[in-house]
Length: 285
Image (cartoon, rainbow, N blue to C red):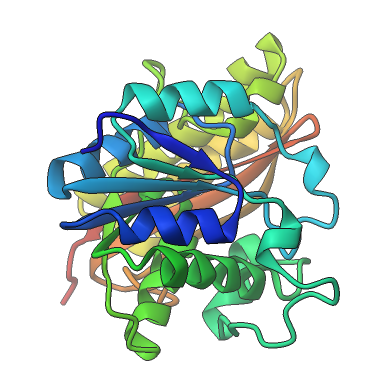
């Protein structure tokens, strides 16, 4: 751990600073607008590694207008400094891509074409491309990713395996508010009434997890979760379900038994929220 944190927006500055850091390296890849969930990723990296690098970059391959994503650079710097980050990389797009963009990109495959990518062709191609670039630049021993973005975590793990990227990937459990809402940079967009309505999302997932714990089959798990979301859709502040699905640990479709994820996305007002909870499906004869 360095006594001072270096902040740089230049690729060359990142490479110089990285070369000066000896010992194990942890990487936390973010889009900025950091919150307590990101702080938990940093703490996990700090506990495992001698040094921690955080990247904060809103990728235009994911968002046609990156300006729509919240931006809190001063607060991000303060959070990273308070949690012992050694190096914070905050590039602009000119440091990441050429003017004509990347001609070569990662292809996420069929498991990157649904859920969060529904209606957004190539979304996870862009996600994995920038994550691979950050990983190659930093050359960490371990990359720490939050389990709230389960699809991103699973696809990154598969990319690491398929492309023989020499890095360990650690998933860190989702950090939640006291009432169960998963921490997200998007939560700041919710009005007080919308935030209350949004609690239907973790409540629905928790109901599905409880149904699984009681021995429910996949259809019963989904029905238990749908009950909450269907009621929320009729509320004064409607909660619109975008998807609700059970997947295997690596996004395998239609799991019948064993470890699984219950994943959902909703829209509350103008804000899209995602969440997921792990569960275990009992084997049935």
